[in-house]
Length: 458
Image 1 (tube, rainbow, N blue to C red):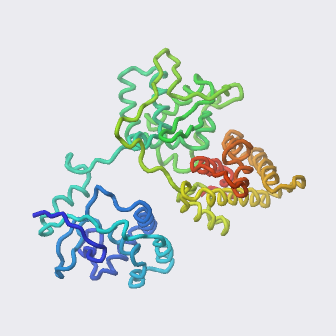
Image 2: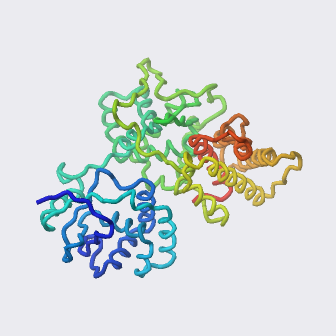
Image 3: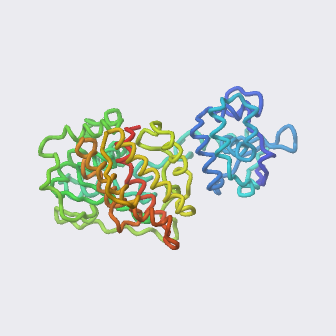
């Protein structure tokens, strides 16, 4: 018999016979084993549950324990472990985990409200055998269609409204002269595992700089724009697609940012960018048709559906493409930036963004012996001038191209930008001005090339 019940965290026990745990003899040992599977993933799970709660479409599978007051969780042991630590971080004291693992988890528990997740929805089975068939379906892959089928990379992007790669693929398909059968095969390959290689190239800083691609970020859509001559860009893109389809490039060859940069540098001279190729105004890939075919019309969200999964709420992501270990102050600021909700704490985010930019600019100037300008009495003007000097030095050194710095100039140096250095300073003193979450996140993304130049790649 199956029964739907609601239980508290304290009524639930970890399953000492769980396949992930191996041989464990106590609740504390089981908890430590779950954490050791991946401390970073466990911490991320804690943060997700603290901020978003439990998945409303997922229930714990439980059976009664030897003590009739408690229930053993057969399915959901990672979530239960996270809940145990969130609700009572002292449970970590009973484990043999090192302090370096415990301390970040204790900090992550700050702000958790157990009333937000309790009571916990559970499905009670009479015994393990009754539950095992359903557990097998959840953990053994497709299972001939019975199990869960993971989305392919482009399906994930389509769901999230990110058309950075998808629009470019369709642009190539419309204009590159493939036969219907050739393009059908190409689409099948690019829609599967090979899409990862294409995405790495198209969404990298070297790739977007080489091709003249910028990304327009809207509330429910990321749209790639082309700033180069479409005919030239099409030749480059066709070469990229052909290289991927012929397995001449793969994930092993595109493992780092340096590998990707070398790939574009090694393309033939006629596929290298030049000043004559830059167009006056950017145009969306979906609106470009070179062969007379009708351009793709903008996609509308289906009615009565959520158009996008969770967008990043915090000012900064948890992971960074630059080295975060070069400065203790930077590490502290990044921790704040990765936890502050840009919608709930816009002023705090503005302070942190400005502090990160100023720290990176000053550290880069010190490392490269760039003299500081003396003119300018206002601090924000001095920072703007220093930032401009740093951008020029970065480009002249060859670390990045001028096009890589466009977003920084547009978002952080142009006075009318909603997250310019002047605006970030104004939010502190203006009684009514408040930055938008989108502008703050755009400012953060714009600063990444400068942070990478200042502290090196991760």
